[in-house]
Length: 72
Image 1: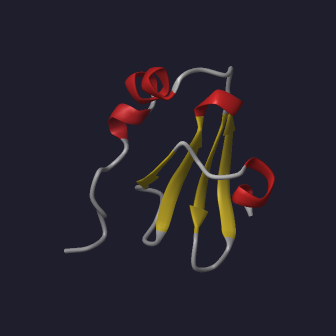
Image 2: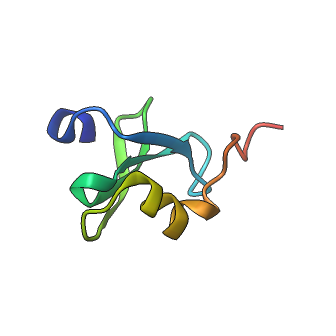
Image 3: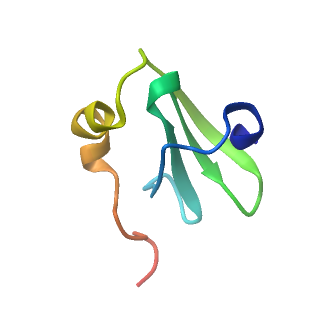
């Protein structure tokens, strides 16, 4: 999975993609993955110019959920 290639993510957040999905952010490496940890599946890959984690969160991270949106 992504961690085998990129190591530990700078940040892991929940995702609206689907139940069980999380967002692995590697801002300094310019790549973010939406994954299902239990299934070991990568649903999406997003590539962009390398940036700080703060810059990523201000740009794209604002819309990421801080709690599991599928757990009620």
